Image (cartoon, rainbow, N blue to C red; front, side, top):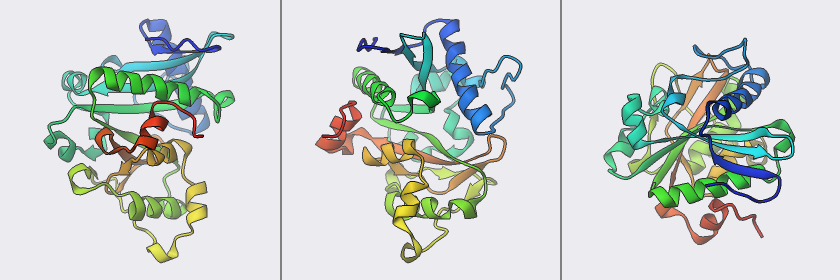
Length: 254
């Protein structure tokens, strides 16, 4: 299902070469830029990978002028997760509330953009293709972990507290970070929040989910191997309003 607008094509990777290109972009962003690591990371070939890659679909955005993959999103449906032995998120969060819902789940992860394409059209193109896939397959709840750089909770007190006080998921969607890496997010009281600072310190991907009506689970997960502090984002497509649906479909705000 390619998106054929000029310069950028968005599609599901269907060759090993395309998968490796996605993993190479992930290595540039998550390892070279952010200092992450993992048991299956291939430093010699510059590939960021893990055991879930073989079970996932990989949505890639390719710059047709250069032939380079400049954006990726990793997708794991409930059916594929069953074959993988669970969702990636379940290594960090208890997903029991989502599983109990009986609704169609789709995990989103490993989202990143090439440094030269951030703040441009590529993420909109990825979102548009993702929305079409979700509609086509009937996915109802989208979720996945998103990361803050670093593992010092005190340095992240403003954005984590803002997320907890303003965007905590309702009980039926409230996944919880697993011990022993669980980190409370209500580090500051609502009165101590500097809203402007908190928003500035929140990564763009997290802010995008919030604009779409997304929530966060209870607690952050401190991932020292990947040098990140993760939050679990949950988006129930049935709760989106008309404006959020337009944004979700990849339409730029008017």
